[in-house]
Image (cartoon, rainbow over all chains, first blue to last red):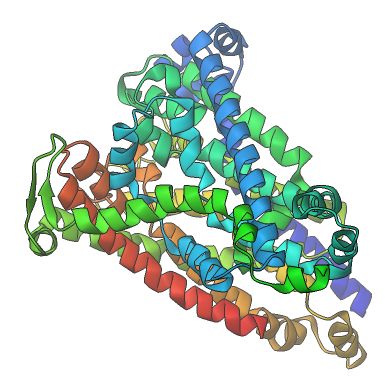
Amino acid sequence: MTPAQTKSVRDAGVLVALIGLGLIMLIPLIWTVMLSLKSNGDLLRSTANAFHAPYTGENYAAIMQNSQVLHWLFNSVIVSGLTTLGVLILSSLAGYGFARLDFPGRDKLFLFVLFGLAIPEQAVIITRHQLFSALHLHNSFPGLILPGLAAPFGVFLMTQYFRAIPKELDEAALLDNASKFRVFWQVLLPLTVPAQATLGIFTFLSSWNDYWWPLISATRADMFTLTVGLASSQINFAQTSGLGYLMTQAVFASVPILIVYILFQKYIVKAVSGAAVR
Amino acid sequence: MTAVARKKADWSNAMFVAPFLFVYLSLLIYPLLSGMVLSLFKADLFGGREFVGLENFSRLMRDDIFLQAVSNTFYFVLLTVPPLTVIPLILALLLNRTTRVAAFFRGVFFSSSVLSVTIVTLIWRMILMADGGFITNIRAFFGLPAIPFLSDPNLVMISMAMITVWWCLGLPMMLYLSALQQVPRDIYEAAELDNSSWWRTLVFITLPSLYRTVVLVAIFQVVLQFQLFGQPQLITQGGPNGASRPIVLFIFEVGFRRWDIGYAAAASQILFVLILIATVVQYFVTRKRAK
């Protein structure tokens, strides 16, 4: 065979392997969608019914009328949105401070913040839960949002980004007697938009998918996020007669985050690469 | 005067880092330190508190449920980290091209990573459950009996590992892809001029240049998989007979179901130390890479 032929044979082999692996990846998702399109009664007789017609959209119609699921969606949007906004503000301010300004103990303080990267959420949960009990913050939006703001990763990322911006830019502005805050706000911050997008999408995704803290803090159904709400729906899984409806909830909960993923794919890739270098 | 004034260390500059530090100290550092203190007490929810020294820790060492949870966690890490290091590497090698097909498959393999654990467990229950799951249906079609993936103590952790590999392989794949982008082009051009075969290029050029990323991915996954919680908590509640209960589920049950919070805090310290060790190793590996 000529080298060109060898190459095309190899490419075909790669494609076949990818299709096989891709199917393993997608079958669980396809199966979920198929189940969600069946009536609950049909599935109660046998889930094998999902392999063939009749399919129905009744579960989707039902979910649009389920005010509780829509309420959880609303809670998730508020919690993830405000967490993201808060992280961006705190990390940008701190990043500028650590990268550009001098104050006593700065470098030690920065190392101290980096140490936070090694603290798992699970290790602080008992006393954090007690703290929030004492402050009466459980089952409230501040209670769900605040822990997400103590994220050292954002500070690390923004500090690195500010350090990479040429110093001449802000020095020129400072010589013009602009205040440090104005230099930060008007000169440097606009240059950090790519980092803001990366950090923003990373924070939004992890906040949207967070299960651990809302499970412990939100104990009232009206304060559940979508993630915890969906968990509460599966608790009586073995007894459920609404299998199709349950699967519809899974699809419904996946759609917003898959849309975010498709829209911001480019930044997600950057965010995950950034997360590794931390 | 500005040049001199700017150089001088100035307390007012710390205002920029103060808001974050306040949140960081009160919501991460304070709970960490007070958790360490709490682990030395016998404490319950109603404020009862008695100093017991290291009694909680020696109780942990005698607690069969905790020891089982520790060994389950290590077993799970052992089951997931090798496939999560190798499979994404293979995928990245296959997908490291600029075609649309490659972009499509990158999207496919990453898509599961954006789903929350509650969605993932719901989906996989419908695949694995012995009564009406996808695999059972397929096997029944060929006249084969169902496999008790979730109720057999010997299979349940393997099932959890399968779910987790499916869920988590997107991120390491992306890390490998971005590392592959950084291998200098001219090395490959030189290899091509030398008529180096595809296989030789892979073994002698591509893989050695990925070495550090492989180590990094492996440690990153160790840290991540030590924190296993949602998959068993949602699917099996740690059963059957505790065969799928990891450390974090133990902490959750002791702390928030039995409200034995001093004891739960002690178990948290052990988890913290385990993860700290892995993170310190990761820090040194990353630092070497930066040099």
